Image (tube, rainbow, N blue to C red; front, side):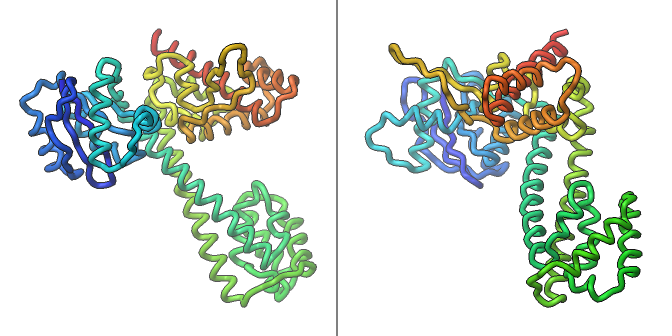
Length: 396
């Protein structure tokens, strides 16, 4: 029985081989993340049966995924360990030197000592893999979008303060059009109210807004009343143009990603079940499925809650028993974020018919819990219901 520890880096990995008796079969060596590198590694173990070999690597975000997939394609057992678990396991050592070679040996030794309880990394269905990939891209773009909105807000406060307050909410598209055309309040003051109103109403009509005349009057009055700190009109126009262009581009990209995710999610049996759950709309349904993945890989609902990082492990010693425990946050941050959005949707919708999650949140509020804690408690219950309904679908 051979334990192979792989310390994964960006474009290469350090590999060490050891048997269950603790004998080092191969001193640590480097392997490139390429077809030749994988072939070189597999050639070393070609004389062993596949059921005698186990690979152990740490989860490294994205760097380990390519090598993991290649090894699983060849039919080898691969265990992907939690880096925190590995760190805690070797904390007992007095001399804590750290190099890639030592880390590879540590992982190999961990595999020999935990051989009988190692769990093979589950092979995710291609649809779940694609959904998770798109979900990560969506989250990244949304983070950039938030930064650009802050930048846009700062620009408006300098060159046209108050415009954002008038054109807020569902008028955001109209705000971009108007601000791109008039990046400074002084540009509005240079034209007549009639000419400005005509252009404004035309822009509002294209966006499907029917209060163009009233809004145009407010914006025109604001341009004459506001106090600004404006750069030259050319400088302001350049800054606003690029900010607005990036926001529009990201808006189109996120819409395209959500559409693609929705098409992929429709191929899965649980799609209709998830979409019928309160608080889960057209955008959140594919994102939620993407972040949870194949629910069958969790042995029970508690495992799913732990994966989300909203579990509160018990803490008891002697006569003391901790009752006020914080969530662990040792799980998927993306799932927590998506789940929190679902709770926000449920809370704002205030469903009138029976809804266990909403009623549970109301109960926690009545107990005096703060709003954030209430939503986390609601998410805990929501994930239990999610697990039960989807598993019932697969088991029927």
